[in-house]
Length: 328
Image (cartoon, rainbow, N blue to C red; front, side, top):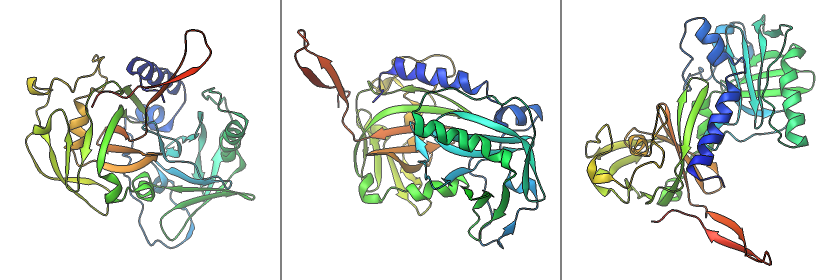
């Protein structure tokens, strides 16, 4: 697990650099049109009559991939969306658990018509299986797939025997809702991200001491309990704040432990973790014993998994497992 702040920071910066080269609809196309990218929670009407998609504007915005050619990818990993097809006025931005790419084109008469041209994509090595899936998805929209609405508001594209099933993120995350009893306990902070349209930036919090303690109706950072939050977990999988003290905009002197090893520029900070807790965050599973909290443009990763660092003995005769978790 990558938890050292500097290493995690550099990983995020490298990814952001690669993303800046991809003609993603959310960033490049929307900015060119002088528009703000659609919010993640863009809604699709429920109970609609199934049939072809007639209005291209109805599918604009962010969509999570539920299933592609029989594979069901995870939604969130490391605090970022892992599989999506996001539509804008000039095309679609794509990812399925590995690289990023896109296809220029537009939905016409219920069929996506791609346009020829140079395709830009990131080039991360993810193993033969994922790289083959990348190639299949990135070429899918060149096959004139047909778009149709399903009764539950999901969006399905088909090209031959290949199916791409999509769902809006704010609905898709409900499939990963965390039961109330499994929220209760102490959680270690690992990463925090700030999201900006189609991009993101973040730092590791693995060395920040203390824990996020979640009770049946309260949440607190154990080193600064004076900023505890009372909450209610609703059917919308949000931790709605019902009480608690006012949270200062910046870290006060009475909460010195909640500081980031590297605080600079427009990067999020450890203090933003409390802003998330006070901001009615959504909560969902993002990995084994790991949850993702998101409030507005901020996201926080919390885990109960152990942090283990493997080291070699001086004579290289044995491997030593060291606990690398931050102090409680």
